[in-house]
Amino acid sequence: MFGFIPHQSVQPNLGLIPKPLSVQVQDGQFEINSDMRVAVTDDTTSVGLKLRNYICPATGFILPLNRSLGRGAINLRLDNHLSDLGPEGYRLDVKSDRIDITGYKPAGVFYGVQTLRELFPSDIFRAAKVSGVPWRLPYVRIEDKPRFSWRGAHMDVARHFEQKRFVEKFLDEMALHKLNVFHWHLTDDNGWRIEIKQYPRLTEFGSKSDFSVMNPKEATRSRSVIPGGYYTQDDIREVVRYAADRFITVVPEIEMPGHSAAAILSYPELGNAEAIKRVGGDYKAIGRDNVYNPSDSTIAFLQNVLTEVMELFPGKFIHVGGDEVDKGPWKRNPEAQEKLHALGLKDEDELQSWFVRQMDAFLTSKGRRLIGWDEILEGGLAPGAAVMSWRGIDGGISAAKSGHDVVMTPTSNTYFDYYQAKDGIGEPVAIGGYLPLRLVYAYEPIPPSLSPDEAKHVLGAQGQLWSEYIPEPRHMEYQAFPRFCALAEVVWSEPKDRSYAEFLTRLKPHLERLRAMDIAFREPDSNDWSP
Ligand code: ACM
Image 1 (spheres, rainbow, N blue to C red):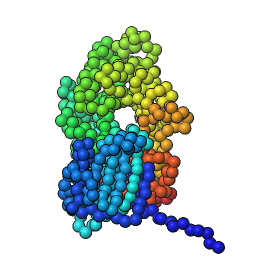
Image 2 (image 1 turned 45 degrees about the vertical axis):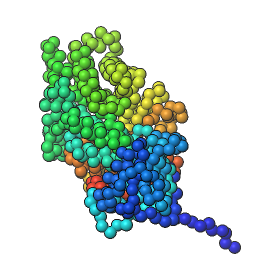
Image 3 (image 1 turned 30 degrees about the vertical axis):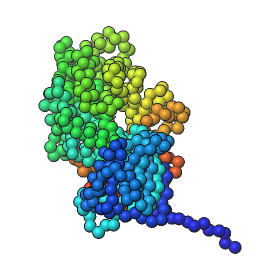
């Protein structure tokens, strides 16, 4: 006797990345044609315009946008009953006579639209009309919501500058992957990239250099075609708006007190060498002066800079760096020592902590929140500050245990400036390290030692694109993808049934989308493809 064999409905591979919470595919397909419309409400009009613009280039259909929700339309609307899905969740139904995308908030509808794009043939991502493609989508019901609220991508434009248009292309790539925080590393030793009206030398002088200019020994490995560059405040406003249109918050990073040579070269009184000179010390012993001095006037300078920054960036968080501060210049600067003692502080770690507290109090008084790299924990963390745990996960654990919010950014799993092939064989020069796709995918942002209440302080995770060895935009995309595809799933999807092998089956069709978008991603090699 044979047992009863239930009907096995083989689920087609839709290649959805990040993986939604639930997907039910039904038999049949919906064909989009030029008779369709996009039906919206007040709340969903801007998302509707975006959807129309996504569909238009490849199909050639200019779908009318109107208010008549119903059959024959892609209906975008909000529904209070979907509050369980949260502000970024959505329900997507492709049925025989209509497509419905419904969310509790517009962000959810926007993410439903991103999933809808993935249901089309991958040619939908092309920028001009593709002939002979029937634009068919499977009948499906999807319910989806993100696991974490901070789904970040960091980009260093200080070591090598990136053009505004490239940044905007990257924001499009983020949106497709449902990433929602763009951490823009705007200042560092090698360059100052943001116009500050009150301090024009920051860009007149401080923007002219880059990593290859300041590190001539590295120039052959990492040379920009055009060194330097910066964004005007008008440029910044454009990028911030472009991001907001895609439900992406831009978190600007203004590095302090270290990694600040570009600002100090522009205004030497901000550093330590000038102070040492004033008191007749051996300022040459200081080496590269890349740490702000802790004087009242320097604190005021930075708060003035942050005032202009806050006008440009409406998001809650402002990143002040705080990593890798060389305390030597403070040790050798008698004025810094005087300050340290006048404040009753024990050592330079406490001075750094004091420095960050000045910024924290200032940002907090303006209704913002400070975030910094995990070194800001040393010497005591400012009360409302949040931390990016990059030197492993211990900083994240101790911050969360003491009630501070954390974004997990450990080098081990999220530094996308590392090589993707073992020993970098066959790859363009990178900073070092080895972070293959599978290791990104394997990352679990909640450290096991956190209690459920402590774990609530883990806002999410973020991939880092430090650009010392990324001199041009195609290389940036090469470092970014497909690792951001894996990270998107880490921060969006439920971990319980996560499988690298199954991810790979979805990645294959997804890469066709990235190809159609002209993203210079790294082709996974046989090691990546072996589950
Ligand atoms: C860092 O990588 N220095 C935060």
